[in-house]
Image 1 (cartoon, protein in one colour):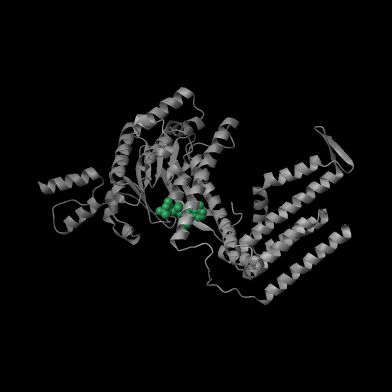
Image 2: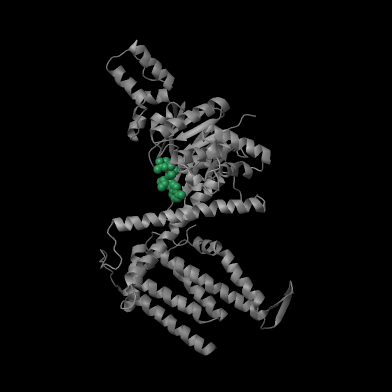
Length: 263
Length: 270
Ligand SMILES: Nc1ncnc2c1ncn2[C@@H]1O[C@H](COP(=O)(O)OP(=O)(O)OP(=O)(O)O)[C@@H](O)[C@H]1O
Ligand SMILES: [Mg+2]
């Protein structure tokens, strides 16, 4: 599993200021949530795909990302397909009438979620975790008077960093249990349930242990919540950043216009 | 038919085709038969754990071939095996493996009893939570959990890391008894050659994914450059014999086993 890891190559997007990338993603999320229109969602998805590929992230990741979230994607798709009543009936399946509008909505939701996943993978793949924290903090700055902005950014950044670690840990535990004969492909369902327990419980314990260690390590290095912090890396704004931010903003306007026209 | 693990030109890459691609094994050829006791040495990152994973059939080589006996006959205890604990009692923890092999309840019970006994976990602790055991006992329970599958090939990745002197001696004794009674094949990695010397005969040395030597303790001592280049050392007993021989003492330093080395010391002391 690779979702959420930083991918160390050089690309246009890797060089961009983290603030711009957070902005681009924010625009994409807004766009994905703004309209239900299928073609709009396909367009947003295409943009995410474009970002992904121009960042020189491996194309296979697109498939892997979607594959790792296949249950969620499938669930969203089926729920919308089966529970939408409006529209012209297409077929009857198990007592449900599937409609053309249901199919349309289901596809739209599918693409919406897929865009969010790809967008997230793109941001995390092109931005080192600590820089991402700075980008998020910069974004939250206007709220500084009401919220502990730096802490929130740090927590988000750590959660992002924790995620790949968690996946690695899950891989190790899977290996340990396979060494003890767990075989999800061949075993009966009652063994599968036990095998699942054998994954989930150790993983849970290791998360507890890891977060304890992380807290201790931070405290040992003098982390005090709320204290003033400075960074070593100065963020530098380049022309490419202006360009990307401007383009995202145009995209944002186009989305608003589309929504306005499509109603 | 005799069982064997056969690796031919095995190459393993982690994250192939990405920026993190790491070659962990490069063209490894290896044949391991029954009743062999093997030490696997190499500096950190040499590919020892990866090799064991391939031998256990947990990792499929990217190139080359790995032919491995099926059905629980090869068992691997990973580094820090207690990380996989999940059951309510030590007994259930040890039963998980044989249950996964689809054995009948009576057979499972017999194997668990045997395995917990073989690692010397006191019977009153069989109903304890695995997490309540001391760390040395947890190690032994983890060993029992793979032993209960009755493997013919037991692969141990750093079994003594983090154990105290007593824990190491206990484990060494348990393993020696197991080999004597069952004739199983052992493949063990460890940082210290001292732990491995009494337990093994054949020595594999790895460096950066390549098997640089497939030899014995005696022959390893005759070619000290192999280990020196990798920052590794011979077992202390052999090092002492070589020093004595250097100083002109009448000993034969290149001993194949700990018994041989002890015999040399005994002769020297008259
Ligand atoms: N799960 C993994 N993902 C990516 N790379 C890995 C993984 N496991 C090992 N590697 C890499 O493969 C190489 C061989 O690692 P391996 O763990 O097999 O070595 P080792 O000899 O067991 O080392 P150690 O003595 O530190 O346990 C190393 O370069 C390591 O960084
Ligand atoms: Mg290792």
